[in-house]
Image 1 (spheres, rainbow, N blue to C red):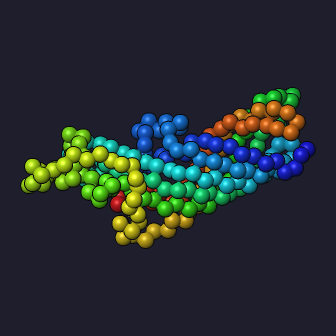
Image 2 (image 1 turned 90 degrees about the vertical axis):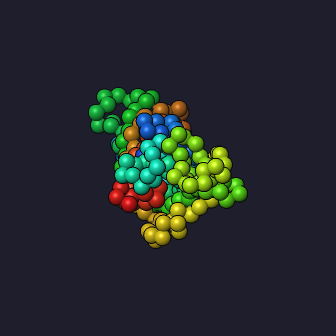
Image 3 (image 1 turned 135 degrees about the vertical axis):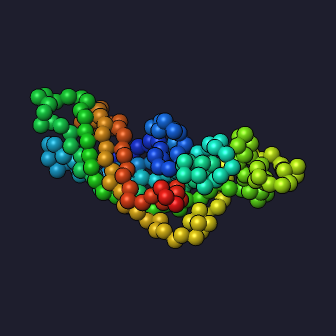
Amino acid sequence: AFKPVIGFGQGVLTYMGDVRDNYNVNPFAGRYGTKVTISRNISKYFDFNLFVIFGNLTGNSRTYSGLNPYSTNYPQNLNFETNLFIGGVNLSYNFKHFLLRERPITPFVSIGAETFEFSSKGDLTDAVGRTYHFWSNGEIRNVPEASNDISQSVLLQRDYSYETDLRELSGEKYSQFAFSVPVDIGLEVIISNRMKMRIGNTFHFTNTDYIDDIKEKN
């Protein structure tokens, strides 16, 4: 056995909270993230892993449900972007208790614990500081749809520059440091006696509902 094993990979970070990019939760829609891992096999069946993940996470929700931006039917016209830095450990299992012979491809599962930091920002104004107002017909303008001065309205387009600190805007000083439980499932492919490749998916179950600055009832 060669110890430790150093790993490097990339994948897609997809947010599955209140403000999401894709209502169908497409696992291939999102921003790219990078993962670096140091692993050590502690038996024939288990590996212990230290890892860090860094990248960006976004959510952009758009609905046309009328003039009330505080409707309980989330999500409305909301967006956010945050940098993520995750550090954690996990224990992976390769199912060799049940495999009768050595195989070049084996399944694996893992579970662990991690901490992460986030700092969410929103794209609420254009490049010259004009606030976006989303109209029920799908347009974005510089005045509310219910304004008495709609003749002076200007059609805007989002610039996707996330300039507004959402925590400061909300006035609620929640923590931007949180914990989560990562659960992995995937396949491990042996390329040589010194190299292997993993293909899989990880779900991160967090203890915070503030990553997108939206709580279920707030």
